Length: 394
Image: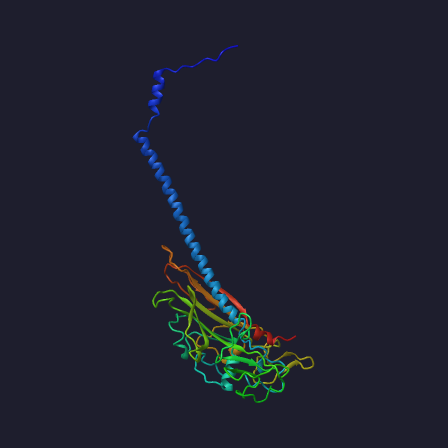
């Protein structure tokens, strides 16, 4: 059996290897440092790029969230527009066909005009019959409650009764002196004189005297707070001149013992434009125009289908923009609303210039802004169920 051989390295060779491995030359060190700096710079650039990308994503998310909140606030209000409990105005009541309706509004009221109660029959017809109003400028009496309106934006008024009664779950308590609506469902009350508002015995629209009863003519009908909200865009958020466009809302309420439209409060920042277009129900399903001044004329008098001089709940194109103001006839026949929202980023993007034009309805377009803020248009269409639904017939 052979034994393994031992290999002996000479002393000079070991010494030579040891001397070669004990350090780096200056050139080698400089090359290593240069390579390290390149790697560090690449990592720093990658981190900066990821940071900028995250910032832009945060801005985009904020834009979407602001627009979503805006749509949510306004849509949830609009879908209740024209809700008055069990009460249906004569014009939209398809069982009211003996005489021409007398409650169709003749004029458009200023939503912030002071009112003394009980209200006149004329004013009540306007408030009940016009669930929404749209302006391109601030209504005359609203100048103090809707200050610093941003140019080229609309003002939207939404009116209805609250969907809950005082004391219901998640509904505010009954507060003496607030404005409430109460419908009557008692046959002996309907059409009779009922104080304090003898002109409208079918309902009470008043801070006092809620004596209307249910169908048994004994149990009081529930009353509901009258809602009148006004939406607009202010040209600042917190401090005048801060340049942050903000969605605002003014509510009608009782403050300091006085019923009035209250000063607007901020809802959502970064909403730069707000445009409203209306879908008007101008024709019946027989293509004849809506006529609020005559008795209902049925296409089929035996089955009472297709009222030829009433709407069918479907808007006729095109949608309209009120501009300087819509007529009472147009507003009373609104069955759907298109909302256009231009949301702006919270923070400017360095190196970016906004050269885009933004389409908000027809033919409205704005821009370019030529600044460093990114923007996006959002839109939606809302059906006014409480108006359109009343006009549907077989």
